[in-house]
Image (cartoon, rainbow, N blue to C red):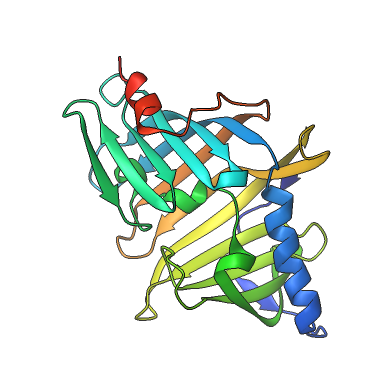
Amino acid sequence: MVRLALALTCLPLVATALTPKELSALVAEIDDRQRNSGDWKSSVYIEQKQKDKEDVVYDSVIYRRDATDSLIILFVGPKTESGKGYLRIDKNLWFYDPGTGKWERRTERERIGGTDSNRADFDESRLSEEYDAKHLGDETIGKFAVHKIELVVKTGVDVAYPKLLLWVDTQTHNILKRQEFAASGRLMRTSYYPKWKRAFSRSKGAEVWYPEEIRVFDELEKGNKTTVLIRKVDFDPLEPNIFTKAWLESKSG
């Protein structure tokens, strides 16, 4: 487990810039370390704090099949939200509400459950597929030396935010900080990753890294923040037909 004391100030370092080949390999490694060749199931706690409003808390279960880019986010608590969920299939994101029995298509920027989290916080990492990278230099966050990397979306790719900034630990290659920008250049979200964990996957034949904790800060509505805790990860095979609307509907009973 890697622990990070949150620090809001980044200090520059004197360092040699990564070559294009080194940068490409680093971004690909970030993706690969978080990717499982088989299935994925995790228990996730989501807490949203909003200024002058009551806290919003969800217990959820995440199902992933990285081989087909499939994803389910199923809410199991509180009782009023149980059975609601999201399904990503064929590059489309759908939301299901058992109260109405209706499915609605959502955008990549969808605020999951009305929190500051979005689909990318729970899905596999596809940075090398979706973005072109540029090394902006090296800095420090607290006591950690980091590579600062700019990512700009590739033509024709649908993502929540067309530009990202990443601060990547030079030793572990874990992301410690991430900022996301709208097409206008406005900063939308800042996320910190204070805890990373790894678990061995038999299907991959290697360890898979995942952020045990993500802290997301809303840059538009100051004071709003979301904490995501990934409590348990299971790499055992899932049901073959799980990533369907019918399967998610069956969990609303």
